[in-house]
Amino acid sequence: MPNQQQQIQIKAKDEDLKGDYSNMMQVLHTKEEFVLDFFFVSPPQGVLCSRIIMSPGHAKRVIGALQENVKKYEEKFGQIKEAETPEGNIGFVGK
Image (cartoon, rainbow, N blue to C red):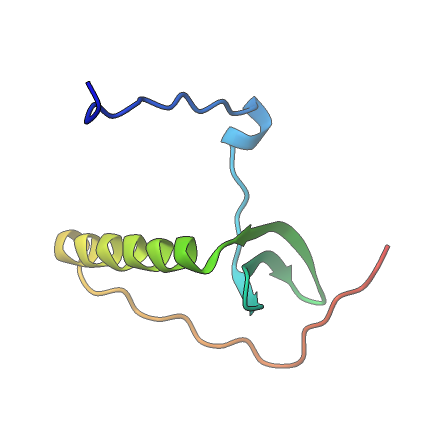
């Protein structure tokens, strides 16, 4: 049947299933891709937790999914208060 959707099996390593906490994110982009860097910052330093690279089309779908889920969350639990912007300059330090 040509209209039948294929089920995709996703594999995940146990260590990845625990997830990483991030309290800061940076977004960069070129014409071809968006780069989302997730950090855990605990002054005086921070750690890059994950870098996600995606196409502009996928980035737009991610934004839509987040907007939809924030709306559902707020309908169920109340309005989310936006976090304050961190103060000071944050930069990368190589190993």
